[in-house]
Length: 264
Ligand SMILES: C[S@@+](CC[C@H](N)C(=O)[O-])C[C@H]1O[C@@H](n2cnc3c(N)ncnc32)[C@H](O)[C@@H]1O
Image (cartoon, rainbow, N blue to C red; front, side, top):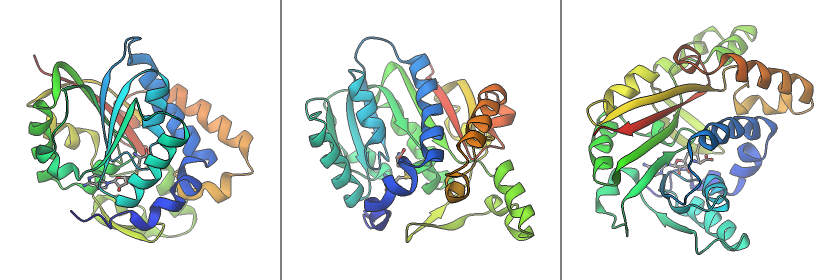
């Protein structure tokens, strides 16, 4: 298990993403959608690549039970601290686990929802995504859902930004695997447009919904530029809420959310 992946980013991750204005807006969009599909009764949720546990805490505060996993030892440590701090140990279990070794884990039950937020699955190759799809079948209940937030291979705002900086080479950078610097964690990142991603899961799942997350809300690395421009960000958020809820928007956003339901 390459635990060091993302370790160096763990301590700062909430400062550089979770608690930034852009990070909050992008996550709010994901939570908004989840709110529209989560039932009132308590679900068993498996979270992949949970990072610092922000979503696990949100799910638990809504009464759900979460098994939150991440490959990074340090991310897991931060998540565990938060769980203790919010007194949610009865609702959340945090385990260090590589998505690619999910078949070796032993869980106490099947899950109603498997959830992966903000690009953890972009660390997997296409072959690994194929394998994951087959493994999820053994982890989900017969009505289970798989909701993932993934980075597509083109982002309109990012490309406009690079164009404005005359960085022409960067405009289509997502078309190829990139080594991305996340707070000094150098991470191999593969970008998948929604159709390609869907291709790895379509034998096992039906598609419910795809929507953009970051169509006009900018990528988080532009946070320094936007931090003091809250009105502009609110305007961009409004535009995104209006235009961002379809497959085309999803394929040109910073991320997209894809909601899959297991085939009967
Ligand atoms: C951009 S962060 C997202 C964290 C969190 N889901 C969130 O919403 O803030 C990506 C996370 O994916 C995790 N990750 C990357 N590859 C992984 C793998 N193979 N198995 C499990 N976690 C992985 C990293 O350790 C990191 O915490």
